[in-house]
Length: 506
Image 1 (cartoon, rainbow, N blue to C red):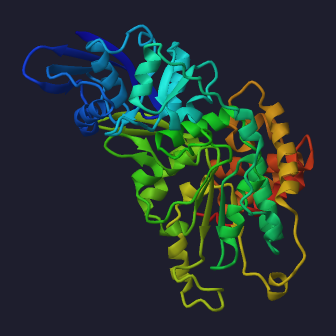
Image 2: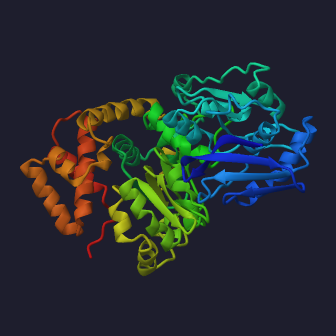
């Protein structure tokens, strides 16, 4: 007999429907899987055979052919175990086909018949909502992320025996539900707070501007000056994720298998800090079958690159396109995939290769220091809005017991500035000043005469490119938003110019 069960596979972070066609015919016992399966899918025949027998079902001693259609679409992962097993049971008359007609099934099988969690359930749930598949049968451990998507009936199953009873109408399974709004409303404090930072008023002001306008930052200072401490606290002053943003982030994390089982949604803005030995594929994305990299895992969050000049030149230059476009396209022989990458870059660097505590105590020559920082190319620095120098703290500030402003206080000002930007860019896909196009910058960043003269002088003396000129305008717009000003003033331009310390004239 012939049976058909719907399932799905992933193409990047998008799901595609796969029709699992199972034919059980007389002949020598064999199990053949066709339709461009990978090694994991081909190995499923042994898991399915053991799972069905150990769950109390009779495995047919006949010729079994499984076709995964469409045949030209690569199938990967263990999520086809459960639909293939149900197809065999349906073809042998043990499962009624009624509920399977529009159902979509995912799940890996263990040898004792339990249904194990799989990756990428959230994008599959979104796919089901778009195309009207119902119900979506998933492992119980994946139910939380699938139920985040409204208007999709999610059926959580723990064993293949329970799945068969549900499909045959012999038992009722309560559809899973999730309170995504409650998850988003609860922040998980990790102890990090700007109140812990002693001194560095200039750096804290710059990070407040970065958070308000979505700007990229690079910090230059000796080891132990507090660069990492400051960077880790940027995420604490960013506005909370909206539901739409949380789902976008969670889709990437679901594909990578990083979602928590008890909460199927990323509720905090991501903070990713890859080591400087990370490869280009690890940072940008790639592999034989394209998968997301760190820039995509940091979508709508912070990507912190410590020891920035220690990253290879190829890796650093690969950041330029996602920083500009907010997404990355990975092309391989196995296919192409587009991944979101709208992140804030926070880079940190020592002033020299040896990491000396100060210029006075540095054993490097001026040429060596210049050569070390020259690993950061001009095009890359052009895309970083704020250049900060983080000096070592004086002893008096280091032992001071007076607390600075808390993250909650700073976040209140940041959210007020973001609200002004939301109103300004209503009806467009821009949300923050850093993402303004050139045309929008000319419209919203008009300068008074004094400000225009000051900016012209800065462009001439610093040798700024057109991109650097626009970055100053966008930062000045954010400074004005924090001040509650409708127009950019000369003092806003003056402050924005101060944050271009690493620009070098050609």
